[in-house]
Image (cartoon, rainbow, N blue to C red; front, side, top):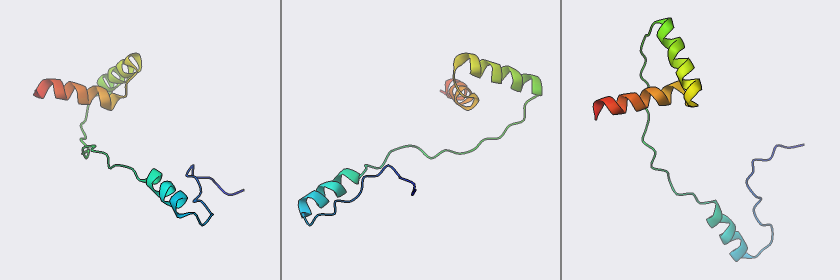
Amino acid sequence: MPKRSGIPRKPSDKNNSAVDTWVQERVQEPTSVEKMKRLTIDVPESLHRQLKLKSVAEGETMADLVRGWIEEKIQ
């Protein structure tokens, strides 16, 4: 069985308005997400463990927590 991508199939009839509607529904506006840059730092294992526990307790990723802390400090 072929995999389905979740994209509806193009209308097979000769009705151009149905095809035009199908194409317009596929058009997506570009997102204005800022490009991310990687930052690598070394931390002691004990600090990493504490960060990991805090991220689990807060329900956020470690990266999201650290990004938030950096934003707070530089503003």
